[in-house]
Image (cartoon, helix red, strand yellow):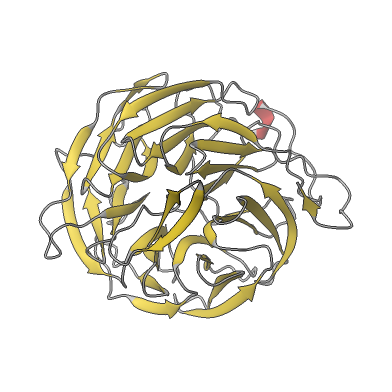
Length: 418
């Protein structure tokens, strides 16, 4: 993985094979449309009418909100029960999670902070204990543990319960990414964990530390740092795909439906593949993969699925995708095709929007300023206007950027630049 350090006011890039700053974005299980599974907001009838499709995505300039030291992952859900999506952010250096509460208009003036384990780098939001309150699960890379913070209602959380990841032939597992899905068919959500130092994926069946059953680890390529869950071969069982930072490969593990997986199949990606997202990119009804390549200048990897869980890789060049560190999929213009949001970690931090053409290819749409060293991006409607917005975690700026999508009604004649 890639660790970036400050030196004399400049950014010194240090490549470390065995020590990672963290996985870039957390990935929850994706739904059939490619977006992360979220607890639902009010439906269209309860809010504004849904906007018409066919527009040009146009983001407002970023709104910047403070986090804490080295924020590196962000997740979105309604944490306080007011039907507006809130933000949860892991802060790697000071071992906390920052919560930012939505005022109802896509602004986030209120915050709370909760201690977690050492080196938090990924989190998911889920009702783990079935009490109707959303809970937080955090992967602590350096602590070799998970932190579970059970929600008590109205945005409040009990102190963390620490779940050690246990003994490993590698000495430590190094949990770097999390997803939640039903891996054994019992209609209850389980956890999958990417283990960066052990080069495996593990599954935790059950709701919490008192009844977790650890399955695995299932071998991956070297340094798995981000992960998605979906049904890639159409058999009704949940599968995993992982971006492996030190082997330039994507690992696909097809699920058996009992919490275990077939041996990995590996597919080539670019150098230092660090971010991964899943969705149907070419309209054939099969779930494909998009991968951010940090060290392949100006490239992303698009892996198209033939429906059996077998993928064909194409390197895609984009001049604006420079040191891509995280990636998300969403239909930003509501034309029925998934678009890409990519954050670039080096130079001036930017968010790049790539318009999906519906056939697995993409066209550069616009570039937007964000903070210093952006490492995580999520896409969802933050202000209730029916358009998908973006939120980015900026590690060196100790902040998150919120960019609201205004979706201009007429196509722009040139890519926007802000």
